[in-house]
Image (tube, rainbow, N blue to C red; front, side, top):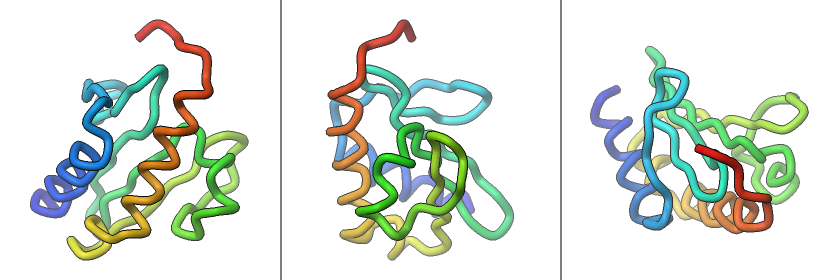
Length: 105
């Protein structure tokens, strides 16, 4: 899973170079005005949680979950981690973050 996790991080950095990567809640988290997404590594997949994923879900069928604000994408291959659909989701998440009020890091 280390190779897949690295591919996920590289894709996020390539699509959203303005985001800052920090460790938050023990996981790599990418921040703009607020938290945009976080990465969790599991045995069978790498999960990318999107903090404002509920707003993005109607346009992005990759997103799973029913939480009030967050949604997650479970990536199992490098092809998924570099796919056009995942890249579009990241771009939309960054755009959504720009409409949020900034909060302290």
